[in-house]
Image 1: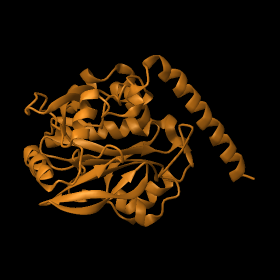
Image 2: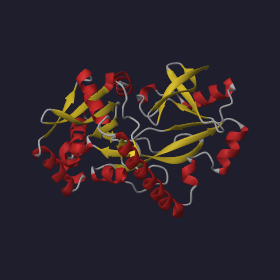
Image 3: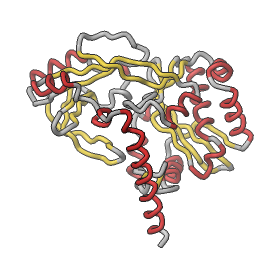
Image 4: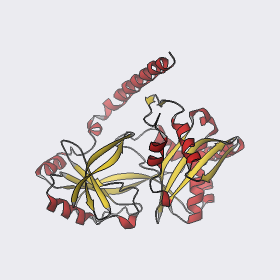
Length: 320
């Protein structure tokens, strides 16, 4: 297992992190105090190419590179724990797909069906597109619509053509790129990455100006249709809930579109004394999750007000 560095994206920024190469797989190491290793893009790699976790653990121990923990998760639909390592439950947002009609009539509400029809009647057209210069410029037009989204500074704003092409062009050989158009203008896009038994939404984004036309709902609808046509039984969209934040607008959006929570095993393997101690004390997770629940909502409100104030101030400066 040879030590290298590998480029990763963290909050929209490209950074080099320590890593190791294991055959054709890269294991990256994150963290300063606690060094945690994981297979790079584990969620996006084809299931058939994922390495044996026990082999990775063995090689990390033999390499003695001061990695404290190794973490990995099982893949949908394997929800039954298969390993003897320390396990905690992770979760994925999943639409179980049989037929498009079943999803449309039984897995979403009448209100969501109206939204899909509304989007169509208002002239939104969704179709597969080539990942070419025109499509990349379409993505850039969505990114550059506003430097702020949801009251926060938007980290994709202002990225150049090459960066947008590189970041969105991963796994191109097994991806489908959808575009939502209104009167010929690209107002939304989605990238779907295909595996043998599942498809994962890597990107879905639309223009704020056309939000009332509900292009994201139309994109989800088309993604389900494609899964049904390909007989892919699971459509994934990242996590259903994030950490201890059980309620969010994104979770509600997923739920309204037929996504359900599927819990999958995630494992943590200590490789050093520090790793053993931190794992035993339960300090290996996201520090935000250690905040008492009664304090989270007030702190989130303060944060959102601060972001909103910054957004207004920066907006005034940009128009000065």
